[in-house]
Image 1 (cartoon, one colour):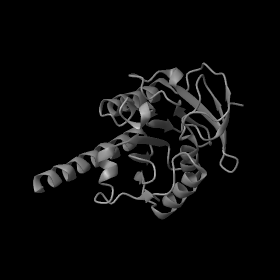
Image 2 (cartoon, rainbow, N blue to C red):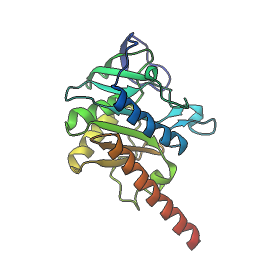
Image 3 (tube, rainbow, N blue to C red):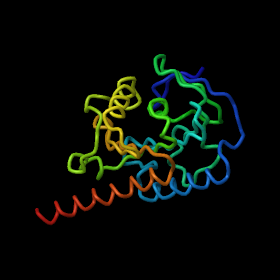
Length: 217
């Protein structure tokens, strides 16, 4: 068992696994969207943001089991997605805050939130978590659902808050903000294309709000 360290707030057991986690076509689709989000600085690693920690993570659920594939912790600063940057999460115990996974690197710090989303709604097969100051800053004007401001990232409270939010907002795909997790935005859908398109649409809307605000000042 690994100790809690860095930005990871759950206990986990990681089994070595060098196998490719996704079929070639699914990996290519996820990699393409990840590259675009990296270029837009919706995920990555920058010295002047979040104390230099990497930010953003992506996951897909290949079938209807609880198993899902997620980007590994602190790999978002890599320019390109590689197979070794992916971790297979085989089981999550939301009560114990425990993750069983296989791969060469620890699972993302947001693995518990991704797991809860998949457990809560079998329709959701893909989750993108990004950090976007524009979308997050204009989340009220954009009418984004949001978790409470006093709920920190990666915590049992966040898992519970997201569960409540998914029950309150039944439309899919869904985008929501984490008010207590600076700049945090989640997009949930049936596939990477739905999640990516939802993020780009709301990014454009947020930037329109910003331009309108600037013109009025």
